[in-house]
Image 1 (spheres, rainbow, N blue to C red):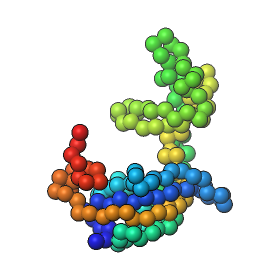
Image 2 (image 1 turned 90 degrees about the vertical axis):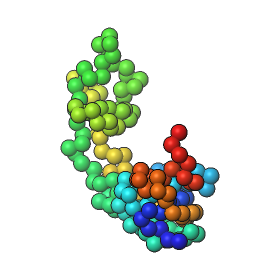
Image 3 (image 1 turned 120 degrees about the horizontal axis):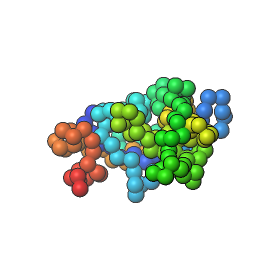
Length: 173
């Protein structure tokens, strides 16, 4: 069996990344055989380069590939760095919690349309909070090294829902 659309795939990987011009890669995350990454192939939702690099592989195949930002989380976009009025961070007493709202913290935010997103605080002044809503890995080359652990046919429910229901096709809880 090979990795192709409507297959549920389990992989184990180590992910590192690097920004343009850097030579050293930075550790991002890793899975292990007890908690592999399980996904349904070909339904979207994953970065393009990841699926393209795994297509056609079999159980036991090892992989080692790099993904350019354009096929990963996109380029770092300056338009995604915005100043938000400090009043948006006031609690019911008109104060700002400086333990929560401080440089380097990632905060859950909601835009005018109610879409949820995460932003990283870059600067806090008396007037505004400067936040970066780019994906943390935007503008970075990704490097995946790993192995294909399992491939199985997706169930009718999984195909209908467009995602894997756990390694053995468990139902939603």
